[in-house]
Structure formats: C-alpha cells, structure tokens
Length: 157
Image (cartoon, rainbow, N blue to C red; front, side):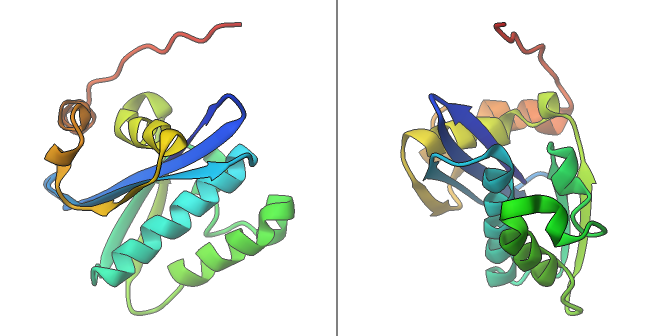
C-alpha cells in the first residue's frame, strides 16, 4: 500500500488501495519535505489506513517494503524512536475491533507502484483519487506489480 522515496534529501510517500482482484479503490502521493525514511513510511501507512477507514473497508491487507514497518503490529512504538507517536497512532488505528488488518512485508522490487507514487509525491502532492488514468504511466506499472513482474534496480555507489 505505501512507500517512501528519497530524492535530493526530500521525502515523499504514496500508496494505492486495491480490491482483492486488483481494481483500484484509491491512491495518494504526498510531499513530506525533509525527514527520515522511517517517518515517511509511517506517515504513508497512517494515511493509507485513514483512507481505508473513510471508504468503509472492513478487511485490509497492507503490504509494505520496509521490514520495521511490517512488524509494527507486534513492536512497541518506542522502538521507532522519535517517530514513536506516529507508530502509536498507526497501531491504534490497526487495532480497532471493527475491522481486520493484516500487515505483511514484501520486497521493494515488487512495489513499483508505491515507488512511482512516492516519487511523484516528492515532486508535488496528488490528492486522494480513484481514477488511475489521471496519472499517465501508473496503469502499466500497476499491471506489472499485480502480475508479479519484477525488475532489477540499479544502485549507484
């Protein structure tokens, strides 16, 4: 659902909510300015959960590519250091009894959609939307993620 991405010291977050068969329910991308990557992950997680609650979702499976965030349901918020308040808010939202939230880790290579949205968020805010076709390029990337296609990333050292 969510993702963060650093670009020239700036952070963005983005996420997409899909029905179980891959149809888009909503997506978002936001600029966060300068902050730590874990804070961007937690903000995206909180925003995704908030959108899901507003849309009346009763069963939510969250896939995150940050290992620390994937353990949020069982971790103590204090383990997130200066971001413990955001972590505690996320835990509170996830622990409500009127819905089921499953939080799982998956690899960044399988999350090009979240990466793409986070990069757009660094550039400018994209308000919560439901029309995938409003963002050129997103549909093809989402198709790759849903079909299980992965691509090698080149990292400059």
